[in-house]
Length: 143
Image 1: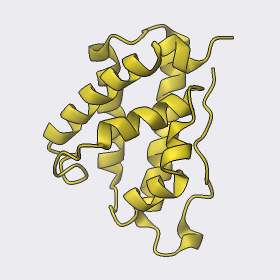
Image 2: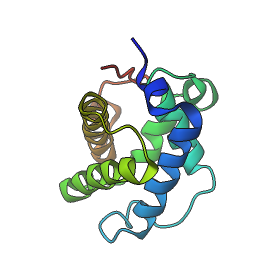
Image 3: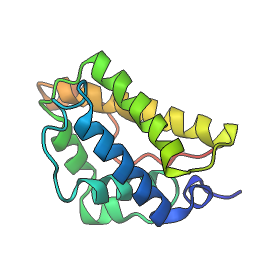
Image 4: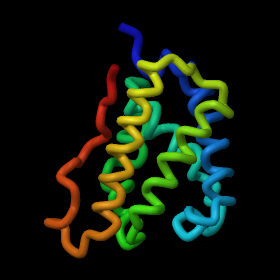
């Protein structure tokens, strides 16, 4: 079966998606606290993470490592409103990026973003390592 990565259109399509999402997040009044200013590497890092999650190259793991994403979210204190808005903006970005709109693909992406946003939210409130979500590697998402 084709990977989510290939079905989405590969690295170029995912990079385009992350550019759209990131611009929307920077401008969003609910997400602005989590994305207060443009970070030049953010789109690339998002692209690498999504690509690897969807069955593409493991560049995120090789170049950054999963501890990086834990550290990025720690101390952000992501609210439920912010988490829900993140998911909504991400899913809206799929349409703007022209990614496939078939039901199976969209359901898999929604599950991935819902799961990832909950992991990030938990890690954002962790006071100790024991409070962190147990996930320690980029999850491989499939159909």
